[in-house]
Image 1: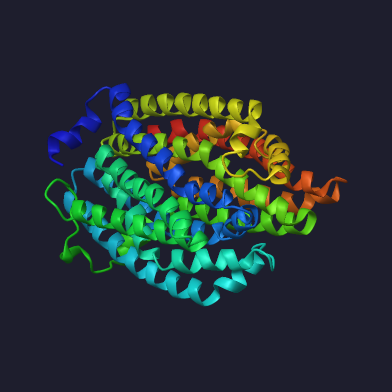
Image 2: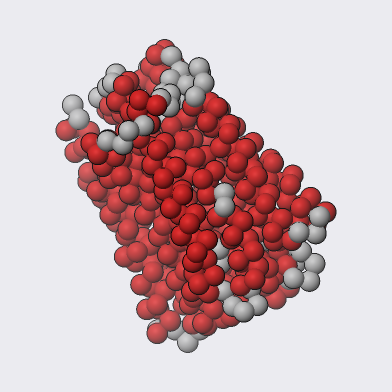
Length: 453
């Protein structure tokens, strides 16, 4: 990307920029959402064993989220810092950040692959698997974990593509993988009768091709930030600020894993496999709200980071205003549709009547306050975009670790219906977390911009 393209982040109209950068990112996240849940949709519709297999694959979700969390630690920690350096016209330092992050992604992926292959079965039983579902979960996990390096490279480096303003290229990264996965899934699951193993092979294959696409771009002539051998020597002065900033999105993803473990183990205790199966579907539907808003914040991040680095505070404020209005509008629309048509959304994943009835009931409880999540995501991600690691870290910890996970274990002591109590923990935590987040943002944002003059 040339200087003229980069400078558009500091000159073009905010509305035009946000639309041009966010739309591809939103499309990418919508596709990514489908990418993430298409396996579950196909598996849930497998004849006779669909509901059981879906539950088995569902208990692998915490491990998948941990892998995603580490890619966020590096990618979302490094990309905003690189964008800020670009805004400061410090191109060499931005490329050094990229090179160090690339090496870290590879090293971490090797460690994670070895660890999960060695401990997978024990972890799945801990995460809520039963004797009926463990076989399906392990079959999926062992193949998926083999593709960890592809996931890390794709997700980690794609952040550096989008932060340069290459929104369409970033979208293509996800789109290529998603299309391949969607095409291969029915062929391998049903055509070759490979079942759960076929779903995992389809996913790993699609991730590998996405990784090749990302590497080809980052080593090519179109990118402004290139992966260079000279920048691959790990430098503590580069790594520590990246990790400090990336720890917030890391915690957001890794605590999603911890949250899923807490939910699955509690639901297995109080409601059995059907309750765990319902949670698999509900976590997928939560992504329907979260991921497109995440795409919107990805579109806003380069604008906010660049202009913050360039000390153009008016453009930072204008971008955030459009971001939060758009995020709230989307969460309102999706929340409304799910509250009105819960059975329609649930039927995408299963035709099992018992599971469908149970999940439709649980959806209106678990996602009861999903309407306000847009404000939480917009404020928290804006803190990340302007390099405020400590504040963002606290807010990431607040909703899930400080509030939601304890409530999952506390509320069942106060309700006769224990399963209801577990699901009810989500809206209680949402209300408190969003209130604190919006209040903290209102107090800190103006102070940070004044200090940036």
